[in-house]
Every structure is written in C-alpha cells, then in structure tokens.
Amino acid sequence: MWSTTEAGDAAGEGLHRTVYGADVIAARVAELGRAITAAYPDGALLVLGLLKGSFIFLADLVRHIDRPLHVDFLLVASYGAGTVSSGNVRLVHDSEAELAGRHVLLVEDIIDSGNTLNRLVPLLAERGPRSLELCTLLHKRIAPDLVLDARWVGFDAPPEFLVGYGLDHSEDYRHLPFIGAL
Ligand code: IMP
Ligand code: MG
Image (cartoon, rainbow, N blue to C red; front, top):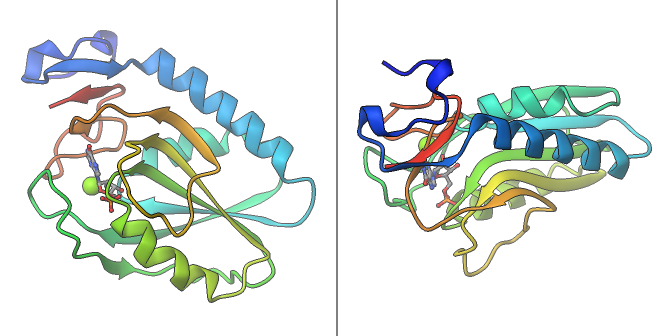
C-alpha cells in the first residue's frame, strides 16, 4: 500500500515514475493561491471545482486564497475506463450556485484534449458571471482550440497519463499525495 511517508516513491505499485512530488505540488499550489488572491481585488469569488479530479487540488488551493469566497462543484465525466479522452463529455451534476454577477474561478485538475472545457465554458458563460477564469493544476498543452485558456497553470505536464493528487485511472490512485506516470 501507498503511505504518505513514501510520498516520492512511485515504483512500489507499478507506476512508471514520480512526476511531481508532494512538496513540489504544495509549493506551487501556494504560489497559485497568492497569484489568485492578488488578481481579485473586489467582488464575491465563486470557486467552481470540476469533480472528481480537482477535489484535492481545490481543497489545498482555497486555503491559499486569502479573500472571501464560496466553493461549489460540477461533476463532468469525459473518460470511461481508458486513458484516451472519449470526447463524450457528460455533465453529471450541475452547480446550484448563482453565477450571475460573480467572479467565477473554474478549477480543473488537468487540461488534455480540451473537450471538457470547450463543452462546459460556454454553458457557464451563458449564466452571466462578472468574470470567468480558469485555474488548472496541469496543462498538457496539446489542445488545439480552447474556448477559454487557463489564466493560472500549476505545471506544463508531460505527454503521459498522470495519476495521483486527485487524478485517477479507472478511479484508482486518486488518493496518492504525489503525481506519478502510469
Ligand atoms: P480533456 O477533456 O481531454 O481536456 O480532459 C479533461 C479530463 O480528463 C480531466 O479533467 C481529467 O479528469 C481527465 N484526464 C485527462 N488527462 C488525464 C491524465 O493524464 N490522467 C488522469 N486524468 C486525465
Ligand atoms: Mg478523470
């Protein structure tokens, strides 16, 4: 089993390698939080997490955003059991929060093909937020056209399938405190 004391060790459970260790992630998430804090001088901030992949990142991130905010979630499914985007993006659970007139910060775990965001962003923009920005922990930089690119990016990710720190493969590995490559 994984343990937090072996947070940098990917070898034990069949992972190829550790890509971002827990300490590296923590330092970067704190930087993102500070940058986001500085970027929103006024108005109510609504942090909208895309489940499930962003749940750990969002939990850490909001603790570094030093201003009043609300948190809500959307559940979007785009991958089945595979490691390639199906392009079949489903909104499984919608946020009930009022977006109109609010600064909305979408929080995503990773931008890969961009299918999820390209489907979701127009839907949210239609609700009349005062602003709509995107923060992603990882960006593969392979999406050809993004209707909205991320203003804040944790790391430019390598072209591998990554797991841990919220990211899964068939629902496994989400709980790992670091990010590894399958
Ligand atoms: P996209 O729609 O192809 O941009 O992919 C978005 C979603 O696919 C992300 O929110 C993740 O949940 C999932 N995903 C994409 N790449 C990876 C990966 O390398 N590891 C785990 N999940 C991924
Ligand atoms: Mg996923």
